Amino acid sequence: MNAKDIVVSDYKLKYLFYGAGGTGKTKAIRTAPTPIYTFAFDDGLLTNRGWDIEFDTFTDDVAKGKIVKSAMVKAENKLKELEDNCPYATVVLDNLSSLEEFAVNYTAQLNKHTMIEWQDWGGATNIVRDWLFRLLKLPCIKIIIAHEAMVKDEVQGDFRIMPAICGKKLPPKLVNLFDEAYRFTADRSTAGESEYIIRTSAAKRFQAKTRLDELEGSVTWTNKELFKDLLTPAEESANTKEAKDGKK
Image 1 (cartoon, rainbow, N blue to C red):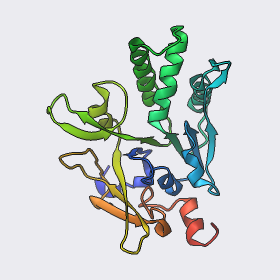
Image 2 (image 1 turned 120 degrees about the vertical axis):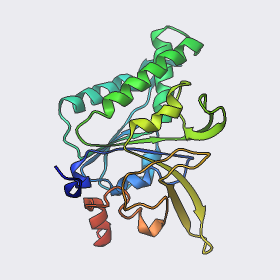
Image 3 (image 1 turned 135 degrees about the horizontal axis):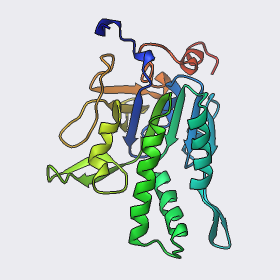
Image 4 (image 1 turned 180 degrees about the vertical axis):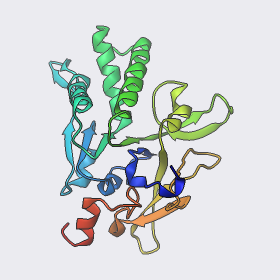
């Protein structure tokens, strides 16, 4: 083999998108190779209405103040289905923070706690870790979306902006599980148009990384550009092609 023959589209890359709400993380999945499936643990996918993205929304079924069927049980059935047969080119988890909340509720339910207790968080951490490892093994491109948090790095001793996830050891190590990890921020141009800034290389205060030469350390798009070639620098997705052809 020779490195000059490597084609990005031959790899089932693992992506991590993290950042504050409203920074374009969910919008960015539009450029992923199709067909796309999303585990939607919140209502963020509303921003992608009109796009060809399959999804299921997972929430707790509650009756008389009690959970009668956990979102985790329903999502687990879908994950097992994809482990047996995954017909999608891209699978998305949106988002990790909401998954964590449902995992805590589920653990409290299993422990028969009427209120969430500290040991429920330990169980939720194990569930989230297990979900991540299994999802990242699917034979397709994987995109995990997460919020961000200010976290103390137990190794360096300083505070850094990291993907929000439960546990003390997992946050600083989370980026290492992925091929690509991007931090999303947003701003407005001088003309008042929304701008999405994607950081693809690390800085002192936050984590990020890329191995794709097509992406600069900081990339800015407007709403009109729809994150052109973010996920498919070597080969356009069907969604991107349709958008360019004026079909969207």
